[in-house]
Image (tube, rainbow, N blue to C red; front, side):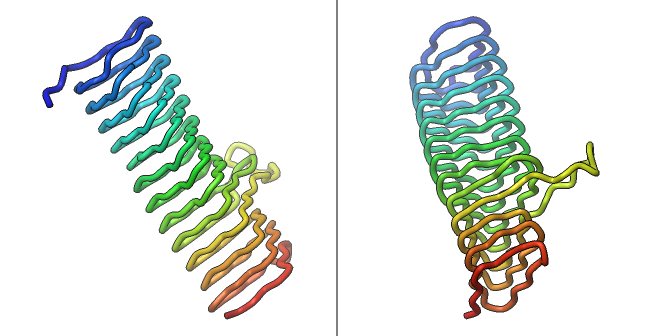
Length: 236
């Protein structure tokens, strides 16, 4: 289908959907119908009522998507809310991302925060910010750097899972307060710090400092830092 060129919204109003090259919103814009475009940029406030499919999302202001969202590349510096499922193939979150449905893609870099009411599925999940996931977080490689505040997921599953306390470069002598909590953490290789979990299951499990674990099930190797506790451990 032929594209309609660019759509630039600088004022306030409602606009039809359709096929565009680039959509740029600097005012307050509502897009009524489905949209397919090469780029979707928001510097002001936007609301999309139907399905949005695009090559690149860039959010510096506030954007709310009432339906599904598909994007090859996503950069959120402001606030992005999706009231349905989101496929964000390569995403970098510097601000806030909220989704009411599942969130999937290939590469996730979280330096701000995400709040997801469904499952999160990526190949690589790298967080140095914060996350609240009310479902399963699954990725082949999961790397979490805990700064301040609490990150949580119902369950975490992956091949290699590394959770470490984030070094505070601004206040290097300050107390680390970042924590992670989950009911179940399961992977092939697992290293945890500042983590509370009911069950940890893996082949090679290394429980570092600041952890409280209910049950550890391991196949090959288990190590435990003196400052951490495991209530029950089984090898099998």
